[in-house]
Image (cartoon, rainbow, N blue to C red; front, side, top):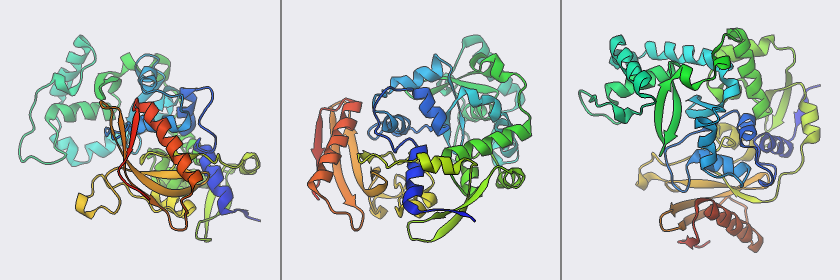
Length: 388
């Protein structure tokens, strides 16, 4: 018989594999957190704190912002590359990422991007400068974009640096004030990780299996979207050839059912799954637990969209609005802003989900979470600009 997993158990399992079921305290093993997540997405916007810092802090509140950059630049325990977006990935996974360099290169070479990048001689000139001068950022070059100015337009040197970074010829050496510094890959990636390793099929099998391990259960599409380093056809082929997968049915929030794939040890995972902490958490909009909006809505009934690219007049909620997770339920969303220089955290607006009652206990939980978040960024004053 097909294993059926009720909605509450499915939510608890998902939060558990995401590192959000436990109280975010205790000894910090930052690299292990990132390994468990698979990667941590980078984002430029610092509304309160940048997404990558918030994601890690949500899993252990002993985390502090400089710790991540030390793992990248000094310890060489992470490398930076593209999943569905720019991300930091454990260095141990690098041998399994080599097909992604080739896959992205093939996509770029077949697109408009290739026709607008610098020629091979100019690429060599950029690499020669980096070899002689050490890691360089885009600010070390001064070529200008030609033609009509457009939102995503980049000067030729930026396109060239990006192209070589995507293809694995250059790697991120470090970031300074979030600016990326490029270096030759052999000077960044340890030699044992650059050596010949698993073949393409082994890499594909690992990527599929590692994705499923980190989502607990999922459809073909959810497995593919985890790393975004495979095509859907790759995942289908893997699923057909893998005898260790189990087909299960997951109950959705609306009481419908979805057939998904699960690892062979799914029953042991379910047996070990306990109730989520009752702590109220303010999650970042880019948190991996909510990144797949369709999965989020299906499991939790929480319809979430970040509106940073929506014109102000058309926003339903606000510019940067954070989901509020209590236990294994999303109970609402809160808009936050920070002035770190002045040590201020602002609460412009808060919204509750239907059928969620605001109680003194919940108010106390939110105030405690905001105080913790304020402490993380060095703010000493929380100012409410709204009332429930």
